[in-house]
Length: 71
Image: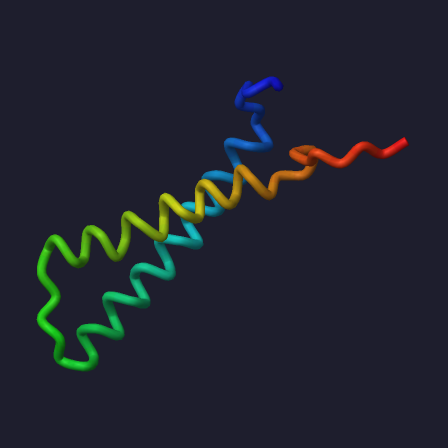
């Protein structure tokens, strides 16, 4: 298996990270709306974890990253 990073995978990881970061921003905003004290650690985790997960999903779901054997 080749694990080279093609521009398609890099851009998919970037887009996935942006979507994950947007979800994290919404999470922090909702927590602040409900008067939950948002510490720096929580804010960092709320932004970092979804961004990382989005990047991983973006790379995993890139077209051409399939294991099916089409004949």
